[in-house]
Length: 243
Image 1 (cartoon, rainbow, N blue to C red):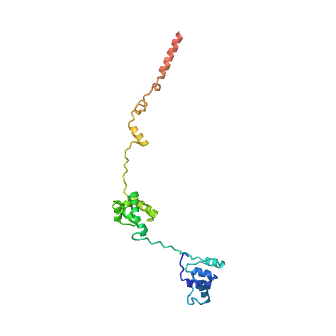
Image 2: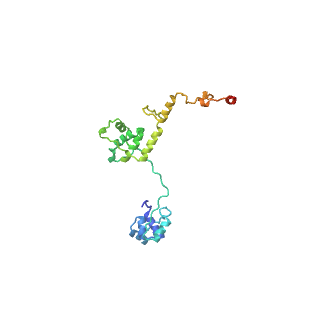
Image 3: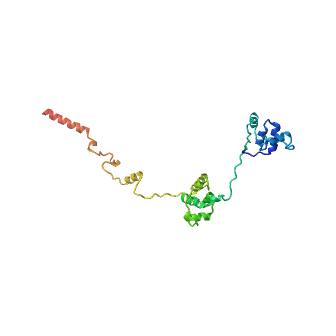
């Protein structure tokens, strides 16, 4: 049963007197022997014990009692607590089984290499180690440094993935903003190439110049005097008539 029954004999007394449950059902629910329940019914056992109502104590419901009365083979279930008490946070250093303590340096080495942003206090919380051990692993002065291999602390069971992710996010949040410097390389992005090319463009005859917008750029765009054109045509026509 998920919940321990309070006052099992007093509860059995109440169930015998107030319900139609079988001795086996009451014995199973109260963790008693069926003969002991039969003795309670006969008055040979628990003669001076006052019955305790499990319904009022919140350990049994009327619906469960009705189910048991309808089906003699049904086993009553203890009602769970209505309120859930929050689990108290662990204080002090993390306890690590003896079989996994030798894996701590490997976990520290993995964290130092893969998450250098983590502080020593965070490493101590994740792995359950001490600051001198962290320093010795980081500086490769640990007595067993030659045999150490990086190992994920989550895989080793030293911490959970949720705890690791929380410490990583906390370290990233507290880290100062750094200016990223892009190293010059032989290859340029499309934007950089277009920007650099625009600095070396030289004006040519085909490039539009706003200062010369009023001047025709080609022979076909020149403006002609209409009167002079048609005047010349008229003079040519008169010469033909004279001929």
